[in-house]
Each structure stands twice: as structure tokens, then as C-alpha cells.
Amino acid sequence: MKIFPRPESASVPAVPVMAGFAVPRLPREKKWQRRGLYALLAFLCFIYSFFVILVPRPVMIPLLFPVLFLIFFIVWALPVGQRYPGKAAERLFWCYTVTLLLWPNYLAIALPGLPWMTAARLFAAPLVLLLLIHASTSQPFKDIMRARLATVKPLWIMVTIFAVVQVVSIVMSPQPFMTVNRVFNNQVVWTGMFFAAVWALRDPKSLERWIVAYVVMAFILGIMAIREAQVEHVLWAQSIPSFLKVDDEVVTRILAGSRRLTGQYRTVTTATTPLSFAELMAFGVPFLLYTMHKFPRLPVIVACLVVDGLILNSLILTDARLGFVGFILGHFLYLLYYSIDRWKSRPDSIMGAALVVAFPVFIALGVLVVLFVGRVRVRVIGGGQHTYSNQARIDQTNGAFEKIWSSPVFGFGSGEGAQRLGFANGEGTITIDSYFLMVLMDYGFVGFFVFYGMLVYAIVVCGKLAVKAPQADTRRLAAVIAIFMAEFLVIKSVLAQEANHPLAFILLGAVATIAHASQQAKGVTSR
Image 1 (cartoon, rainbow, N blue to C red):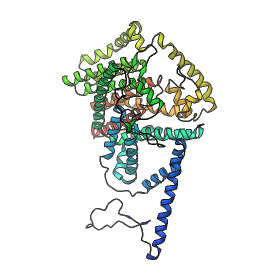
Image 2 (spheres, helix red, strand yellow):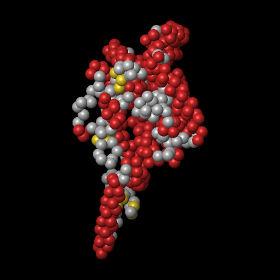
Image 3 (cartoon, one colour):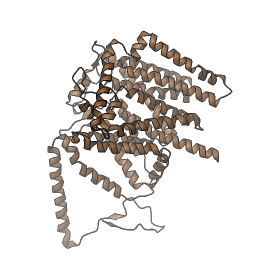
Image 4 (cartoon, rainbow, N blue to C red):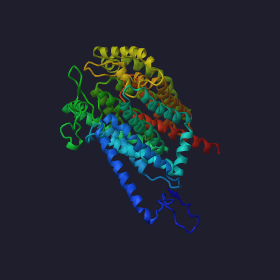
């Protein structure tokens, strides 16, 4: 590969990105050598692909690593220019967000011998690849990302360390081929989505649009939940096109619907379990309260109240306690933020001071309602039917702290902690009920403290900005992210499913947006 210098004449038009690279021509008498090399390369690619297709799926992923390394090397070797990235990355990011909430992840194109081609993967993989290309070829992209990440340096360092811990956990896994597949997926939809959000939500207006879009999608999911509860099966169970049908036991169980032992149907909509759907809806509470606060107009307030009612109804239809805990926590924390912010921004108004003083009364009333109103107590704390679930969590905690000491630093590998713990539910399925235990068993104490360190750091940074940021919009957005992370922390104490983790990494990336906006506003104010 020969590199030619870029012409510096002012009369020369703009040069394309790859103009500096050219394949040197071989002398005429050596053309047969070039054609022979091309034929040999094609033959080797054919043999390599043939064996990749023949091997079992767990072995296929490691065999694809040379191809991935080749792609990364090519991307790294691309020349750096001043070309500003287009809108493709933002569009892919938005498409991924929509599919994450509104498209069932189990409706996929499943070709023999290949991983499922889900809608989320079809958007996430090219999005991450495009970001890598921008990072290699676009100096403006580098400058923007560097400026935003510099405001939350400990956060992106912890995200990177956690990604490394996941890779290291492959060595600790008893099934490394299976663990490689999980780790690769996590790098794309967790680590990749963090950096994608830093870019796609790089200004407060973009983050605001993302929040409003989430509220709209929560409305759609709430309507779907009502209809699903009426027919008592997943809405598309009888009308899936043949090319999207996946012959899998788990998918069959999802399409059959979920029920309590009492026979009560539990809605799932686009999620895989009622618990994941309840978590998804509970996360929408701070977003809709932000929308009401940001746009205090009657139509908006009425629409948000309707969405709030749909979220509550959806939580009732899922019969998931974790959803009610998140629902109550989201409302109380946003009310606390609203009271403090109004008191500080309008010290002459009695309403803010009254809300702050009365807030302990609201908490006491909420506790009394939970303790003494039977239906609310069962929804939040649980009743006799939840005794087995509560005892199971205690037994799992005791078992985890007995077995983690055989691999305390990096755990047992992504997805392998449940197998090592060996706790089965009533249906005989190996499970872990708390993500606190799951992340400890999967990634050890290093992964545990780094993962929850990211969340705590985000809460602390956003909590400070919610009180001290000079702009009202920045304070509101910071409060929303802090409340979301608090909900995520609480819900993960009783839910180990990772279906909604990309949302947490997206909002971790949005912390950089808020911190950078606050820093810019302070700079303008000081001048």
C-alpha cells in the first residue's frame, strides 16, 4: 500500500477521504501473480466460511474474531480528516431506541447456523461500527466526544474498566465459547450504547426529545397492555410471519403468556417477562413528570396524567411488586426535586417552602398507606403468595456469598453465575432473582464495585447538578437522570434480567451531555 501526499494547491478541489490511498500497479509481466493471489485469497475465504458454518454455534463466535480484528484494523488505518459526521449515527441510534421498547426481541430472522438477526442487532451493530469509523476518520467527531467525556472522566473510565472486566471474565468461565457470545453482545448494546448516547444526545435538546419519545412509547405500551389483558395472550402470537418465527422453547413460552399459580394472567407486551415490562414502564415515571414540568400547558398535563394512569394500570396487569416500588419512588423523588428547586429558584414564593416543609409528611403518609391499606401493601411489600419469592432471595444471598470465594476477583464469567449458584425455581429453571448477586457472581468483586460505582457516580453528579446548575433545563434533566438511576438501583435489588440494561447505559452517556451543558453555562456566566 503506497501513500501519496495530499496536494496543497488552493485550486485543487476538496479531496475525498480515501484519495490518498492507491494500489500500486504491478509490471505487466507480473499480472498473473496478482491474479493468482486473488484466486488464492478467494479460495481461503471459501474454506474458512465453509468451516465456520459447519461448526456448532458456540464455536462459531471465536472463529469470527479474525474477521472482526481485520475490520477493526481497517477502520483504525483509515486517514483522519476534517469531515463532520452525517446524520446516519443519530438515525440508527433513534431506530435502536424505538425497537428496544416497541419491537419484541424474539421476533427475528433465524438462519440455520447463524445468530438471530433481531431488529435491535440490525441497528446496534452498524451504529457501533459507524461510531468506530467516525472515531478513526473524523477530527470534529473526536473533538466533540473528547470535550463531553472530559466532563465525566471517572464515568467513562469506569465504563471502560467494566468492559475490560467482562472480557477478562471469559477466561474464568467454564464455558468460554458461550461467554464470548454474551460478552460480545454486551459490548455492543451496553458499552457501545454509552458512547453512542454521548454522541447522539450531545445537546440538551436531543436528550429532551428522547425523553418525550419515551413517554409516547410508554403510552403505546400501556394501550397494548390493556388489549393483551383482554385477550390473555401476546397480541401477535397468532400472526407472526413465517420468516420471523423462531423455533425456540423460550419463545414458545413467551408467546403462550405468563400466569400466576392462581391463574391470573400477567401482561408482557413487547418484553420477555412481566417483570421486565413492569421495569420498563416504571422507568417512564420521571420522564413524564419532566414533560409536565417542562411544558406546563393543560393539554400536555392531561396527556401526561393519562400516561401516568396507563403506567399504573400496566403495573397492576403485570402483578409485579418491583414496578410499584419504582412507580412510587419515581413520584416521590421528583416531588422532592420539584419542591427544592422551586424553593431555591423562587425564594419569595411560599409554595416552594411549604412543599419542602411538608415533604416529610408526604413520606409518612405514603408509608402509612403502604402499611395499612391492604391492596397497596400486597402490591408493594407482598402477601402470602410472595413468601416463597422472599425466602428464595434470602437463600440465594447465602449461597452466593459461600461460592463467590472460589473466584472472587473476576467471577465465573458473563451469564455463568446462575449456573454456579445452582438455584432453581418451581419450574426447574436455574435463576438468580437479584442483579446485585448476578453481577457479583458473573464479574466478581471488581465488576460489582465498578458497575455500581458507575450508577452511584451518575446519581451524585446529577444530584449536584439538579441543585446547583445555573440553567433550569439542565437542573430538570439532571434530576430525571438521577431519579432514573435511583429506580434502576432499587429495582435491580430484586430483578436480575438484563433486557433493559441498554437504557441505563444510554442515560449514563447522557450524563456527559448534562455535565458539559452545565460547564458551558457556567463559563458564559463567568464571562
